[in-house]
Image 1 (spheres, rainbow, N blue to C red):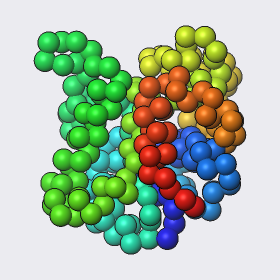
Image 2 (cartoon, rainbow, N blue to C red; image 1 turned 30 degrees about the horizontal axis):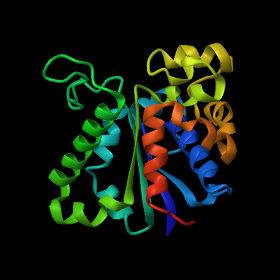
Image 3 (cartoon, rainbow, N blue to C red; image 1 turned 180 degrees about the vertical axis):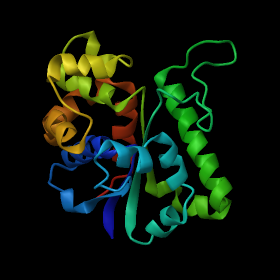
Length: 219
């Protein structure tokens, strides 16, 4: 069985997740990571619109393809950004009942609960109970670019959870929203020492990293 299957918004997210996983295991496990959603060759804008995006992440996690993939994938990494969590069909509010903006940890928990409920509704409680331990949620608040700021900043900006795409471009230079460019800007996460030194700077990255470590996964 393949060690990790990636369910994400787009190929650029795949690149970041792959580099983080390689860094975590201090080994090149590239052959043990396979993209499930979207398809890897969906790299032009029209194809990404067709096969990628946050809605497609939820859709895939309710599909027969998702269910069948448990026969060949040991662990699933399910990634989604929270920047549009209040849109219809996502429906996760970013404030509590009193109007207070949720902390990153609280927002991550709500989004994970949304996924869990969605899987239960699609396949039932029995299936969910069997497979939930094999899913690691990568909920990036508010976009995965925020996870990359600790690689480029040493001041408070490394903890930022807004305007991250702009902030990243300020330091990383010109790059496009595609697999190859995001592989380059996140490549230092392949180094275990770098990853372990900086990951706690970003709250939602910290949650993801520690969720993987808690499972004591061995390649």
